[in-house]
Image (cartoon, rainbow, N blue to C red):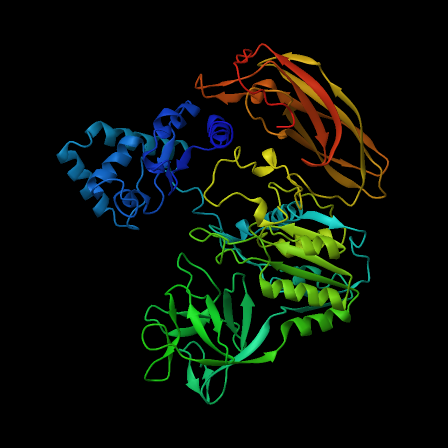
Length: 627
């Protein structure tokens, strides 16, 4: 908690870069986070100014609800206010239930007026500091100012800087004149992630390459099917409900993993979902919303037929008395699924006709591995993995461009493909940013901010938050990751030399400069992210195997060199001493490690730190570097 979790909150709050915090839904050691003594005892001390703490949506109601921590909502709301929750996000825009519960809590003596005054003062203090109570400065800003050329270029720069080159055997950057097939479910679409704004336009990977190369083709690689119940076909008329009739409608099946699929009507491009009455309609932009009503599972039966299971309601699709498809009532309908188009085969044919295939795979941010939904594994969706293999078999010059909210165990791609890239869902200019990197107009500037494991078996249990005991994250992981923390390649090559420390010995509280000379030994300009890690060699507690302390970005022309200076603050070398209830620095020698990632260390030195508060070593085990 003190070494890993809390520092992420302390730094931005102390700097004034953040002024508010939202408490989490979960319980910690059986206590709801909204009642944590850390809110008043720890968090409030991070900044000189007021910090506002907001309750997550419905979370205060959970205290006496699903968490059953207190006997009723009056007691739950009172406890949250006493614990330091200033703003209650409950019942959408209806404040009456919250006011009623807090009023009753006041009458019962569970809270005092001072608790309300304290919360109001914090809320108004933050709103005043942010200018929220002033006239809106954006009232007179026309939309075309927000969507200006300068803002578009900034969005494009953010997209290109976030692309991480994971593997490259020389296929990238693509040469002028290359004929490219851009394939996969994310080839010609841009998805918005949780809490995204609404982009004024979107540029897909396909659109980003179109016009910049002589021939660019695309295919989503999805299967196309029709559905029948008995001798009657599933049809749809515009935005009306799906129903049985004579003329079958065709649907693209988009696989988002864990056997979860979305059905897209071919003639309109709209997705199938269940409306409020339970009727199936094909009028949706795609999976979305807090409750996703556009996802299904096809449960295949031994006789070749299938049941269609609607995830949001937990019911199978049925046919009502009027012949309409519904999840409201009725026995499950038995569907005959007919494959009309083999998506992988068609994509492979385009790949075979191209010089290079770029397969764009990844996740849908609203499906699997999102708030309220945990992933069961790290694998690519089955349909996407099969598509990738089919395309590679047709054209070995295949590039995998992952676009996802999280890592994948993409070991097959690492072993078989000449190039692999990754980025998160990159906003309106995602396609242009990706194309800039693919074509070499920009050097890939992204680096991984987490470890990509080779297999989910290397991860601790989903509810095991003890990263130290579980040897989890880049800090303690002992295995060989697929891609380590900090990993990311450039189109240039770099050499490291001349490690220097401003001092070999420092006292606790001092700062040490660490510098290295970095040379671009490649044939083109490139950007390197120089990373500084430390490791305490001996300690009376288990220490990280490596921990990032500083990094710097440097751009160099071929043959050019620069001395890059990084810094170690010895105060950051402290660890939490449970016996003293304080952060302490031991007298110890620390390895100073400089390189390209947590596992690609190019130079190493040593720094001796003295004058700390944990010099005494009690009886027991001394943890060496091997531990």
